Amino acid sequence: MYNKFKISFLLGLVILFKSSITFSQMDPAKALKMKMKGMYLYQFAKNVYWPSDYNTGDFSVGIFGSKDLFNLLNTTFKDKVTGSQKIVWDFYETASDIKDCHLLFVCKEETNMISKVTKLIKQKTLLVTELADISNSSSSMINLLYVNSRLRYQLNKSESEKNNFKFKQKFADLAYSKI
Image (cartoon, rainbow, N blue to C red; front, top):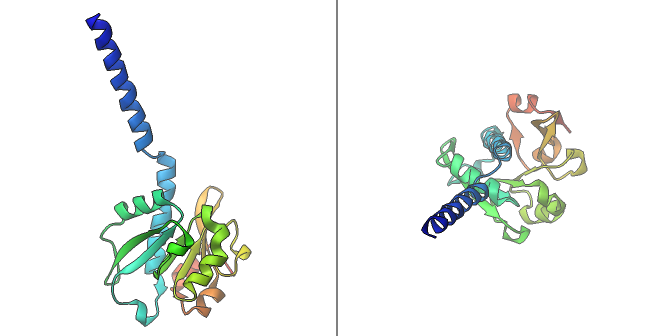
């Protein structure tokens, strides 16, 4: 009787341990894709000539729509700087939560909200999206997309320059496409 209880108890612990690992760890491929997006966002922050009034205080990067991406970036890129500004990551669950930030990343799941987001941020924020193609949205300034399973970016230079954002030449040259 004691052995039967002991075996059942140990089996229960093993099942509990395995299930907690399954739920607490992210799929490695998904984590890698999110980390790559973070690296791109960090490079976007570093390779834009920001208007002078953007060069004081913390550098705020907003993530709209993916708490997992926010959590990963907030941990992985903690204490990073661009110029002399500390990068601060903010998460926005709904469009109405969005506050002033330097750069706003709209996740693929929220791309249907781009027109509403554009009205909220006006011309103060560099808008980065995940659309199938940047030509589908004239308000997106930078678009992340996968081409042949590789993460690339497109630039909407006219929209960016209209909003007083200019890109460093090498950064612009490395873009997958420009409109």
